[in-house]
Image 1 (cartoon, rainbow over the protein chains, first blue to last red):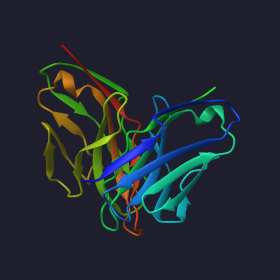
Image 2: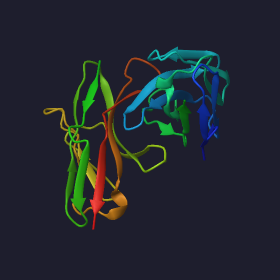
Image 3: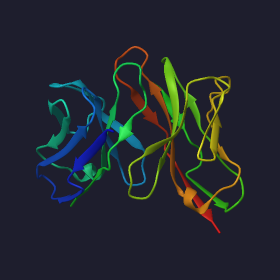
Image 4: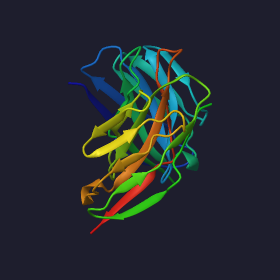
Length: 113
Length: 116
């Protein structure tokens, strides 16, 4: 069975500070990986996707970046946090070509003060 | 691009009564699949229902939905709401015909509150 783990569970950070959120998938080789952001009370917005190691595509610009250093790892980061970055960050995975269902991780709650 | 509309932000229903959550969509691409995701408090969204076949009823955990391409709708229904159904429900569509990844487009979400 596949498992998805996100770290940290929650973060409280200052405006202007750096951020790094992580996501690991176990039990599935070469998954498609995704980062989502959910503002408090808002909908889910896809930020990035990755089909393979070292390749990341941006879906929406929020002054964030993402990287995929390993097949099972997806990192979301920024050098300078903004207040508007607060929210719930979710990592998701899907099988490769032909599968459209995405499976979400437990998420990271980010509060920027 | 594609869009999903959920007209109700909050639906309150009495336990045991039927409930319907509305979902309509607009698509300019070849949309492959439609989903209802449920998100319980402080948890990640999870798939409740999925469909890619027009006019075919899909059921799971007492909920059902039928994709109607003629009216661009994928409403979620349950005949008897339970207290445990209280959660946030998202309608979503997947556009991915021409690429090897699935882009999910979510609606704004409907918060369902089931009261005794």
